[in-house]
Image 1 (cartoon, one colour):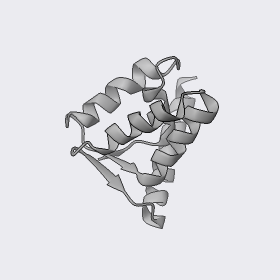
Image 2 (cartoon, one colour; image 1 turned 90 degrees about the vertical axis):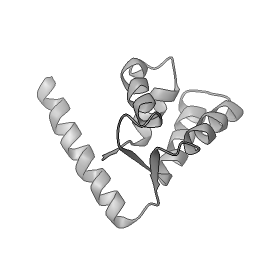
Image 3 (tube, helix red, strand yellow; image 1 turned 180 degrees about the horizontal axis):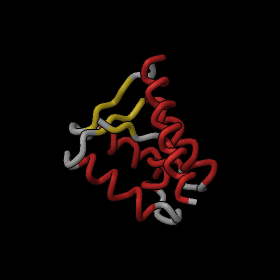
Length: 103
C-alpha cells in the first residue's frame, strides 16, 4: 500500500502545476483501483489549504474536488494517528533520499 500525501494530492488536483502530469495518473490509478492507496485524513485538509491559499483555486472548486475524492471506495482514508504519521515520515524520508540521488 502507498500513502499519498498532501503535496502529491495538490499537484494532481492543480492542473497548472509542473508536477501535475506526473501526479494526476497516480491519483487516477488510485481512484480506479489499479493501485492500493491510502490517504491520511489530515492530508485532505492540507491539500485544501494548498489549493486555496497557495494556488488560488476557488474554495468551492477545491472543496468539490476533495469531496469527490473522498467518495472513492477504492482509496483507504486513514485517521491521523501516531503510527500513520510515523509511516508517512518514513515514506517521505525514503522518497527524499531517492530524489536526492537523481540530482
